[in-house]
Image 1 (cartoon, rainbow, N blue to C red):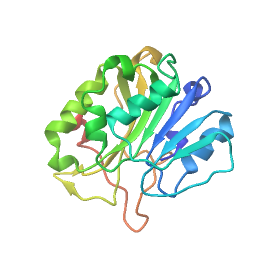
Image 2 (image 1 turned 45 degrees about the vertical axis):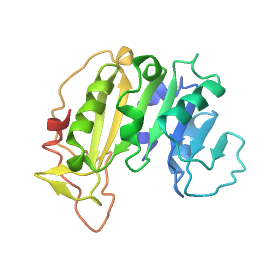
Image 3 (image 1 turned 60 degrees about the vertical axis):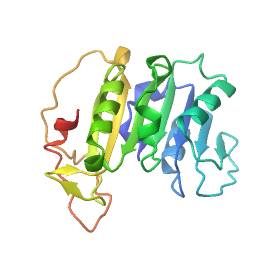
Image 4 (image 1 turned 30 degrees about the vertical axis):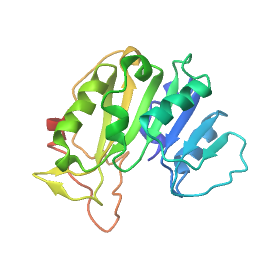
Length: 202
């Protein structure tokens, strides 16, 4: 996940970043810190890290919805409205996003995350998209070509959302996807996946 897939003007006003699932790739977090000195709260129960940068606050912990809400409350971020959430938790996004309240969602100015196992979870995908669309506008989508697909729908999608009140004007996407200026194949040995049919999931 790259910070290039965020609205940079909104990043400039971000109060804090929550990054759920980092494994051994924290290029996204370093990209953010190159733009702004800001606390980044990182969580992953599958790895150990000891970051020297005082803004990179890592907890060796898998995150579910209750833990996530407790962390927001503990860090006193439920009184902020410019948080950024990056999420890659291998299917845990269903429990997290399906019924996260609008009150909580509206604390985030941008979301960027992967949604996994789509073709086995169509109804839950619809719940997530319906829930997010109340507060956010989808502005970038990319199919992960490591995953399989069914009827041209990738099994893993990378999504970026911005909160509705930060959108001045909405226009239908006219250029084809993937965007060659922004996107690159996750697996460089295969061509990037066409996303002509991903609108069916919105």
